[in-house]
Amino acid sequence: MNRKIIGILICIIFIGTSFIPSISGNNKEVRTNKTISSQNYDIIFKDDFNDNTKDYTKWSEIYTNGIWEEKNGRTELQENENLPGYEGIISKEFRVSISPTQSASFSCDMISDIAHYENWQWVGIICFKITDGEDFIYIGYNRNPDYLFYRDSIDDENMIIGYRNDGIWTNEITLYSNRYKVNMGGVTSDFVNNEVFSSRDPALRVILYMSAGGEYSNFWLRVGFDNVLVTGQPGNNPPNKPSKPSGPTSGYTGFSYTFSTSATDPDDDQIRYGWDWNGDNSVDEWSELNSSGSIDSRQHSWSVADTYRVRVISEDEHGANSGFSLSLTVTIENEPLVVDADGPYHGNIMEDIEFDSTVTGGVPPYEYLWDYGDGNTSSGDPH
Image (cartoon, rainbow, N blue to C red; front, side, top):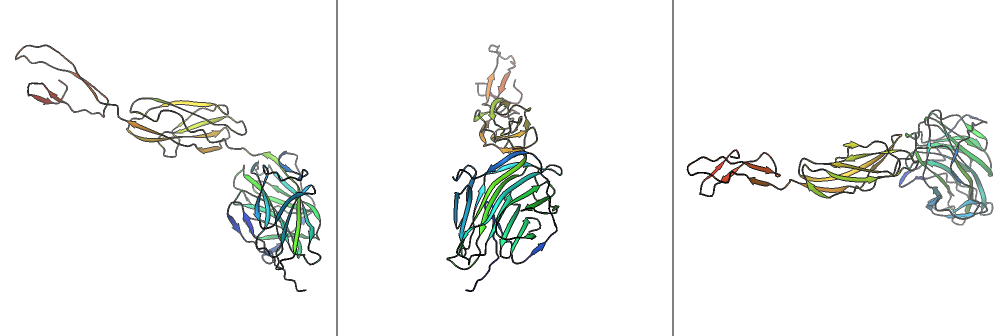
């Protein structure tokens, strides 16, 4: 039987971003060593799949061209050889804290061949990937030829670090802010000096996926993943967006009005509130730092009649911010014009009388028109 080997892996980065790395070309062999450092950190994300139940609070199906099952104490993926797409799952989002001296570790067990169509199905690629939705690092195993490789979004090149047959082994990515290295079944790369993720507290997800890669419709391959573990120092999560400001929706120039909002921080950090009083996307007034969930109330007045969109942003004690809240539309009008013509209220014939008036509201400066009730008028100063 003729067999055609197609070594094309299409990796769709979360939410619509894609690239097409070639397996058959643009590969490079790199030096490896046999040790990798480990650090004891907090568990940030973990799933051993032992309950044999799809946990939709942790995972969702990102590719749907095959079968995703939770069985045998692991997650299993299956796909027919000739299908154009891929099968895989993506984790919930989590944050890690990384720096040049502080790392995070991402690991999982990979089972390259649980079952296949008789002895003919020998193609297929399986990958373990971390991504922020745009940038990524992934490690994979290509079943023909049988090699281990990794790739990142900066170099965008498959780096081969070893060769092996089908089996079960543990994969690990050790990530610092300015470098990373990978371990696949005990074979470890040198450090790759790429700053893949620009943030020191990146929001990341794990993707587990496969491609069968061939031309025969009745050929299929089933692979598996197990013991997904992310450890490190949890990254700083930004506070939630503040609630839409509450307060009056109309008023007059020169009067102060009270507005309130609140927000919570997932790390229970202290937060402060930045008020944008005129809707220009910049903060006009900051509050002091207060506890998570605190209500911030403050007064504000406007001197010019207009329609204003009041919004609030929250920022935690580490400088991470939430983005602006929904806006409250406030219409400010000029205070109604009130004129009080004062006395005197008595006088003598042919004797000059000096009048005073008091004017409030409206828009200064004022112009005056006096009507004396006898057909005479005057303008100017209020007298």
